[in-house]
Length: 345
Image (cartoon, rainbow, N blue to C red; front, top):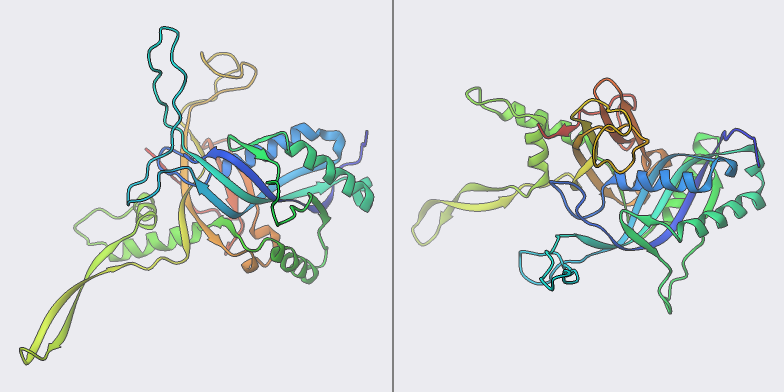
């Protein structure tokens, strides 16, 4: 058992994980890709399984999606989840159908880790990476099962990789570019907090003085939907030998591939002592009621990342406000500042 304190920065890469039947209902207001909290939960579960004696500490997780297949009906504008019927009840009556959204994923996970001194050796890191690959093969991710590669697949799935980060800034940028090319084709999920704040400023500038000022929730809804507007143009009508006005519909342009994203939870109650709340799954852990916290995310090509720091999602906890939130460093003008989150009142 190693007693070294993890201190050397490194990246743990789990390439091309095939996840079957992951949870596609990520929050009460969104569906599609699993919530980023699910991947942070997976990181915490992996750290527990490895144990402190492994000499590795996890500080953040990045997600690159190569392919997804939502389990929904095909054809038409309206889609429905493919649901399963449960076995009949003891009296022979039909059991109720519980709506469950599922999605198949092909993803790469990148972890920001710290390694103990004995893991500076290449052989020791390769051994730990192989162990991580074995542990992950028996885990669940976002409610889905980590599956082995499909038999006969033309693409060979690379094993888990554990690489030390370069210390020089320029060398680290080159290392990030080299690694990001291995994650293509694919898209990385990063934060778009700055886009949300910019949209709020624009809406407040355009708002009339006779109406209430737009809130951060209004800006979030505005970015979460497709907005169609009428545009009036004056054109020359040759048949009438005069000008006429025409009305066309245009869709507002969006600054990138934006998606509404649950990023954590906000407390609704005080922290209750362990075992005092009936029905809690864990009687040894403090309990509190929470609600979802939302922001905006953005899918970008990994080659746009200058540093792996921009890919990582980390957890933050504010004991005063009761906010449990995942943050990301992409396009952060001031890394110490965090855009106020959106949550339901």
